[in-house]
Length: 111
Image (tube, rainbow, N blue to C red):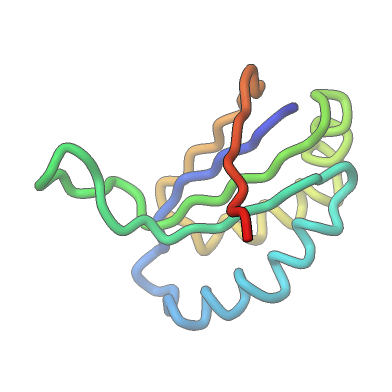
């Protein structure tokens, strides 16, 4: 599985509440509608470690694809890159990390 992790801040001219409305609605739906995307998560970063460290980023988005081929087909699609360039105008200091999941475990709550 391929995971894209994007860490970023907002430019000072971007209203955070308006951004959150867009990001949690329209943009989240677009992420999930993208070719091959299995999962997309969005988080506001609250703290950093070690204690007292200031988080260098305010937000984090992750998205998972089943394989590198489907990731590349979606992420590097010309129309997708055009939308990305527009969205990047809101972001300050973004970093895009493309990782290959080598292990994944989870615990599900039991009723």
